[in-house]
Image 1 (cartoon, rainbow, N blue to C red):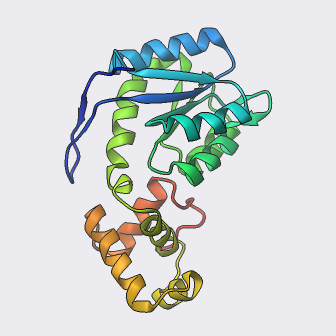
Image 2: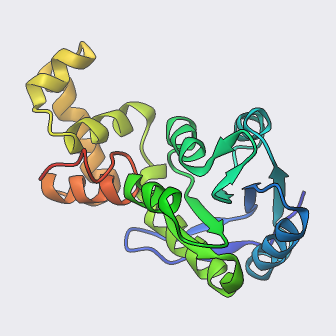
Length: 211
């Protein structure tokens, strides 16, 4: 596979993405073709892999490690909120965008949980810019290790340093070191800012986050 190099401007640092891999959860081949064309306007040589069920979706996440996940509101055995939760567990640095015909409850639930955006299928000109914004927002998250993402999640959920240490079975000093590294890598140096960022990228939902 080959792809057009893409450069995204970000407040922390630019990043060059040499391969834009998109995973699309969609059961209508015609709609999938339209979405693929919209993606290719952003990355003419990027790749879009379509799946239409839960098992294929999970397998593709593990095998492809996509840069972006796009999802209709539901397929036969799976809905977008379930898909989003799986993505957050396995690839939290990859943005999840809904691409559906109408905005309804599932879309609202996904956005509240931290999905990056909602794009109507009749307005696919918005898809490329939405992908760029979502990837730029998650650049700091991609810099974090799994342990650092866990620390960010616990911070956003309102745990104190001592509570995090007890929960993780680590010393307070180790947790403080991880927290300092999270701040350095994200460029966010206050706890309230980390909470807001965690909510924006879906590390915790808006209901879980606490200032």
